[in-house]
Image 1 (cartoon, rainbow, N blue to C red):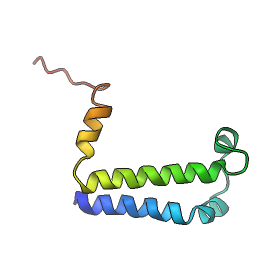
Image 2 (image 1 turned 45 degrees about the vertical axis):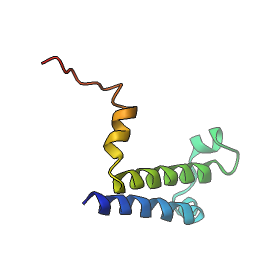
Image 3 (image 1 turned 60 degrees about the vertical axis):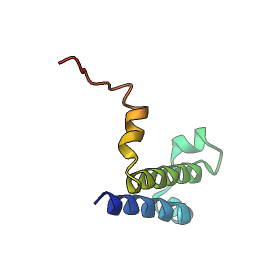
Image 4 (image 1 turned 60 degrees about the horizontal axis):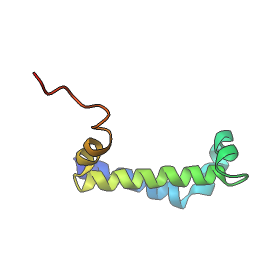
Length: 84
């Protein structure tokens, strides 16, 4: 099941990457992205960054490395008490 979910996530990322202009035209621009990421291409850059994140987490799920990645990054912040 994780492989299917990984392929779906990666597919959504590829779709966002290839059809960025279509998404921007149909859903509009993002004011925060236009202000902080660039004058007229900030929304497109934000969509592409989100697409890269989808692809990255999709491949993590496919290769079964998602839990290791989350433990290595967020696990130190949300450390469980092991003294029971």
